[in-house]
Length: 179
Image (tube, rainbow, N blue to C red):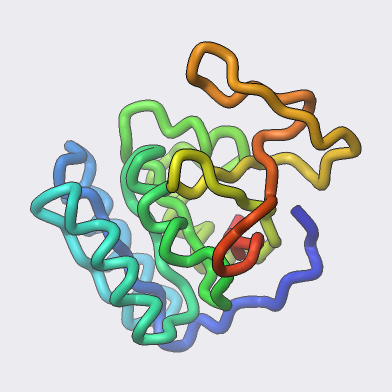
């Protein structure tokens, strides 16, 4: 990650893609509506009915050339949205309303729901290196690694000290992440 990415304009407000399977989706919606008003933003909130909708909704956001798209859910939701945003100028925001939220924890996104929503409006954008593993986006929270070796260990990508290899990215190897 580097802190030299452009800042995000927030006048239009983010598009929020919330995984409807999350038991926190409705509480998240109320926080988003209230805090968006505080910041004078007109947020667009989409609560999915099926997990399959997430990737297509993220692709639609790319087609609309939005500034910020927020993935509300767990690591699977974040991965699905991030996959569509790789190589674009659209920043990914993360709202941790999933079960484990490993990625959000690793990059320091607040786990308190209200604080996480506020973070979307007050945070800063950084570049994150990304790659592809089995046809899906893979990304981590580490700065550019000195050692680019990695191995597959029992089906899980193991690192020394990186999370991924950024070779062969079809649309560029960067993701703008809102922290």
